[in-house]
Each structure stands twice: as C-alpha cells, then as structure tokens.
Image (cartoon, rainbow, N blue to C red):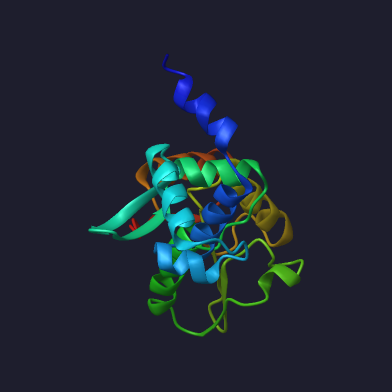
Length: 201
C-alpha cells in the first residue's frame, strides 16, 4: 500500500500542522519550544512535539540539529512546495539565502547600494538591489524555491523598463539554475551577467 502514507497525511493534515509549517518557514530554523512561544495557534508543548514528529516522518520538515529532544527544525523542500501551493509567502529559508547572496554581492561593489523599498517603485520593483553612482548596476537573485519562470519574468520586466544591455548581475544559487538562466539570457540576446553563488543555509 505505497499510497497509504500520503492518504494518511491528507486525512490528518490539521490547521495546527499548517501553522507549524508556516511558523517554521517564517523563522527559518526553530525548536519545539520556539514554536510554542511564537505560534499564534497556542497549544501544549507535547501536542506541538507530536505534530513535529508526524511532519518529520512525512517529509515536510527536517531536523538540522538533533540533540536528544532539543531538535532544531527547518522546512524541507516538500514543505516549501506544500506552502507555496497554498499561496503562503515564506520569509525564512529561501529568503535567508537571497539575503546572504545579496550581502556578499554588495560587499564587492562600490557606490550607494539601495535594497529596501524597491518593490514600491515600478521601475525597480523586480530587483533585489541597485547601485547608484558613477557606475550604476542592478541585481536579481534567483529564488531556487520558486519556479524559474518567475525569474525569467523579472529579467523581461527589467529589460523592458531599462534595456537588454543595462548592467545587471543575476545570482543563481545552484549550478542547474545558473545554466538555465544563462541559456535564457543568451536566447534573448540580453547582456546580463549570470553568477553562481552556492549558499547552504
């Protein structure tokens, strides 16, 4: 009965389970005690512990540190996909990777770097950072937890708003995504630079 675990999950996936997954996704890494304190859906510690065991067995969260019962959890890719399908925006794991990539990129640049409030400006809302000054440059970091078509659309939007030859760095966090992005850049005759920057959180 290979499908039985999946059926069991669908039958037993509670509002509490989604709350655990969303809180884990929001903070990136969290313990059972942290879940008890930070979840809006207040439940006894033992109840939270039992649900984290079930979600771990089903592959929706994973323990990155396991010292007896003091486990630190993060969402697995399976858990990320589940929340994405439900339209939940995650701040934790994937955006931490983007933040780290953006910081590393910024440290190698010169000039005034703007990273906040870009989403409110129509001309730069698709960007993760902008350098202003004598040699302006823009940055887009590919989020590997979203479909690559999202990044393709951001590149197209930037090319339309600025130009296909405007100085833009595209950071990919995996080799496969970097290769796909490079093919897309080449096929559209964009002059953007694709950079590979593996970051494991």
